[in-house]
Length: 312
Image 1: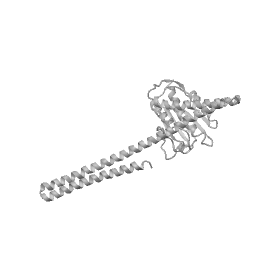
Image 2: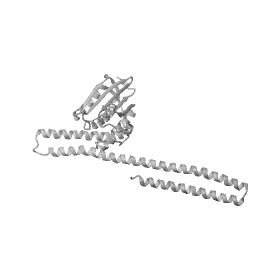
Image 3: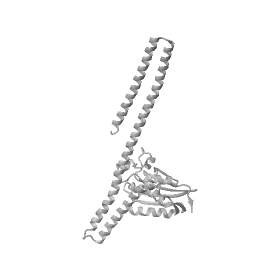
Image 4: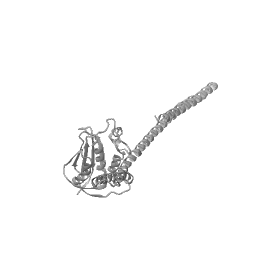
């Protein structure tokens, strides 16, 4: 509804300009017609015909260019409107994502100040505060990494594939006890790759898999499969969560601040930065990242292909 006003204004402006051009052309052609009738000479008739052709051709070009300009202006306006809406959604989401752990930390600390709580409760609230602190640190780190990605140099280190995957997945198993994690490796290899960047790639995909599966599936399950294809390493993460709406293009999920229809409808927390960050890291590290609907379930299948890696 907010875009109706500018759209009507642009349409009226276009119609006014077209009307002015048509009136201008009609007036000039009519004057030349009267002049040719008064003079009644071959030269006057020739001038009248050439003027008419010029008005028709130039007027048509002007109208087409004008309408094209109006259409482009409206398109850019809609794009800007959509981008601002996405930014507002992001600010709202990031505010929620940051305030939630801060609130948990504050409540835990206030509870710890009470003299009557026993050691078991004290340990419980310390654990809760630590968990919230880690979540807060993770959100801040991700936001900063988006800005620093093009500046901070990457250094490749030797990585053991199976050990690396197992180490990353372990905390998710603790946090999501109701979720089954199936990890399968074709075989273990050592390879050179920027460790921090690989963490970002896998964490971004696992975060989404856990977020949209653990509390939104009857029997939440996440499958992780690693395989080799010549000089490429493939890491596939599949889930049986809420999935992607059939009317949505999975590629749109990699746009900054972009969130899926199901995420918005079910008010699933998130900022819309995880996959955007993953795509930027993927481009920087010659990694192919894909997202598609899981054919075997209603969830999502995400695939990382580390291309042309050097094996240790």
